[in-house]
Amino acid sequence: MGSLEIERDEPVTPAGRLFLRPEMDQIINSVVGVKNPLDVEAVKTEIANSMMLKHPRFCSLMVRDPNGREYWRKTQIDIDHHVIVKPDPLDGDDDEDAANNYLADLSVSSPLSTDKPLWEIHLLTAHKCAVVRIHHALGDGISLMSLFLACFRRADLPDQIPTIGSEPQTKHRSGGRRNPVWELLTFVWYTLVYVVEFVLRSLWVKDRKTPISGGAGVELWPRKLATAKFRLDDMKAVKTAIPNATINDVLFGVISAGLSRYLDHRSPIKLQEGLQITGMAMVNLRKQPGLQEMAEMMESKSGSRWGNKFGIILLPIYYHKALATPLHYVKKAKTMIDKKKRSLEAHFSYNIGYFLMNYVGSKIACLLNYRIVCNTTFTISNVLGPREEITITGNPVTFIRANTMALPHAITMHMVSYAGRADMQILAAKDIVPDPKFLAKCFEEALLEMKEAAEAEATSRS
Image (cartoon, rainbow, N blue to C red; front, side, top):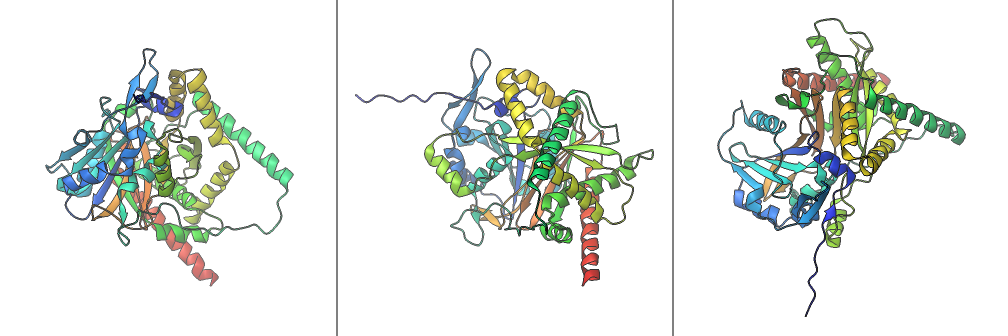
């Protein structure tokens, strides 16, 4: 008589437990737009047969033992319980506005039911888009993006899955040889400075109040959502104008310039030149998995390599009424980010969080994380999407966007790139930032001005 193998419950990772705390309860809310009307049954079939549902996290319930410790328990998937069809038109001036209003409402006090695995897909058939809700406890944004896109195919090669990642970049080298002793000392110094700053931020140091400041309890306030749209070629043109710059440098320069412009519009009093406004960014601490690596992980039938592995870094920007050239915002951002790269701030934040969750408890870890959010001003993230245009059930995808649940920040920003474009979702507490569409316009205009400045510099050099 054969023995029956019983699968054991698998403990939720420390970061996953943090995201499951009632004070956090972070859900990634993504939206995928398509060109043609959605075929509901075809979408359900595609999802049911996808790599996503072969992953243990997506077919496991989150359960708690008598001591309140969270575990994953395997269960059977009923696709009809996870795919929610919304056939009626929603409020909004157009499809984009309707989808953003829907996402804004979901971002406040809209938890996922724990009587099924922690993910849902809402098909807004009247607006030709799908809203994908995945709890952050299932994984970080980069891993989830890689896994979710396994449901899609390339538009030019329908039998192939999408390619994720940036184009190969040329490495720039400085002309002189670096002194290894000086490099080590610099590394130690920056790590010490930024770790001390991180600790102080988790205790009492906070940004000065501005018209865009949030605070404790703001995560419960109603939200508005707007989309800033960029062309990656414009960002690359700016990047090329500044030696060794990256897309993240350009993005943060755009954030700095755009927020300065917005504050000029909103602030009833003149702000101090150079006023620091601090953002929080999540830094991935492992290589982004490709879809082939995902397939291999599925074969192992184990979620042990899965989960959240990222650190938090603090990224200050500074208010300026005007700089000599728009490119100075990017140069300042690059200088600051280069220093951050030469420190262990992200690794420190990840490891201190891991230690607190394991040895002190999730309540204390959550409290300190909450205080850091309350003591800073905004959240920013950037996730790489597919390089090529893609389809699902043969339906061309027009955009991919993402945001998370509301935080004590009055502004959270999440950018996703797709096929030469980059869309940034701006989730704002509407009683503090009532006009996120204007803020999106500030960011878009900042990038265009930087591109014009970069082209002017290139012309003058030629």
